[in-house]
Image (cartoon, rainbow, N blue to C red; front, side, top):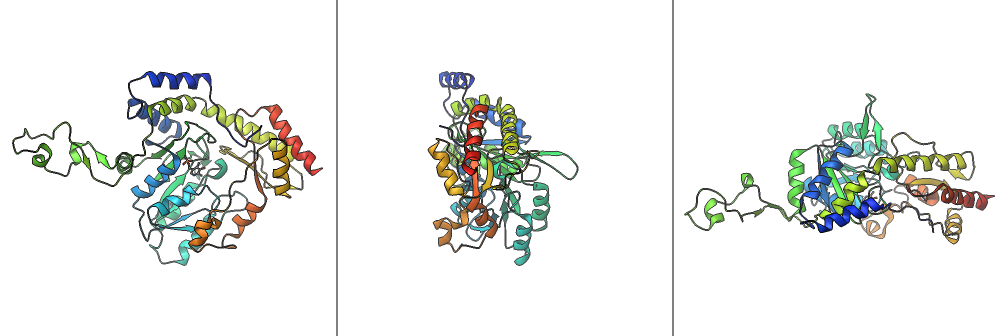
Length: 394
Ligand SMILES: *Cc1c(COP(=O)(O)O)cnc(C)c1O
C-alpha cells in the first residue's frame, strides 16, 4: 500500500522515546522546553510553545489575539477546517477570500478587495496558510495588515522548513515571526515532523508568548510578579513574611489543558534532526513527478520545483479526477484530495456560504489530487505511481 503521506520513525526515535519514558517526567518536564528551543532555532523564531495539537494551537492563537463575538477574520477556503474553525471556537466570524489558481494560496488581491469594500476596522486579522508547503509571501501580507491594523496568524502546518524570499533577497522561513504575529505547526503523522499528536506556536512577541504559556495550562500563573490577589489572602493570614507562599498560584484567564508531553518532546527532538533531509528528499520526489508529467495535456497545475517549497503535498490537477482516484485505489495507491473547500462544508453553508462564492477554489477542487509524497517513498514506489498514472491516461 502506498499512502499519500506517512511518518518516518527510526530506531533513533524509538530509543529517544524509551529514554524519555524512563525519566522522571512524563509531562511538564524539561524536555518540552528543550524541544521548544530547538524548534525555535530550526524555524528562526524567538519563542516556541509546544501544544497538544495543531488545532489547539490555532485555538490558543485566536484567544491570545482576543478573537470574540463580532471579530471578523479572513482566511482561505483551501485549507484544513481548523484554520477557520479556531475563529469560530471564540465566537468570531470567518470571512473567506478566494485562492490564486496558480499558487493555490489565498489571493492577496482578493483580500485587498475585501478590506477595501468595508469601513476600516471591520476586520481584525488574517490567517494565511502555507498550503501544501508553499510559503505565503508574508512580507506583502504584513504591509497590508499594517495598513488595516490587522494581526496575522500564519498556519504553517504544511511548511516547517519552507521559506519565501523577501524584497531584499533574504530567505524568510515559514513561522520565523518576522511578519506574522503568531505561526502554528502540527506534528500529526502526515506532517513533516511527527509526534503522534502535537503542535507548536512560534512568535517573536514576548507578551503573546507569556499569554500562550498561561492559556496552555488553564490560565494559571506561578509568577509572583504578576499575582493579583493580596499577600494576606494568599497566605491565609496577616501574619506572613511578605512573600507569597510556595504553593500559591493564580488562575487569571480561562485557559485549557493543551499541554504537550515529555516523551512526545523527546520524539520531536529526534525527528527534528532528520527534518532537513526530509525536505531535500521531498524536493527530489517533486522534481521527479514534474519530469514525468510535464507536457502532458491532461495534467495541469504543475510547476518545476519551487524555491522554498516544503512539499508537504504534491498536487496536480487532472481530467477525470474521480476515475483516476479510483483506479489508483484499486492498485493500492491512496492518493488524497486537499481540500474540499471549507466554505462549502455543511457547517459553513449553514452560516451563509454558498456555491460560486469562491469560484477559483471550487474549480480547483474539481480536478486536484495529491500524489504520494513522503521522505521514505522509494524510487521504485514512485515509479509505480507514475507509471500507473501514465498508463491510465494512455
Ligand atoms: C494538520 C493541520 C492542522 C491541524 O493540526 P492537528 O495537529 O491535526 O490538529 C491545521 N491546519 C492545517 C493546514 C493542517 O494541515
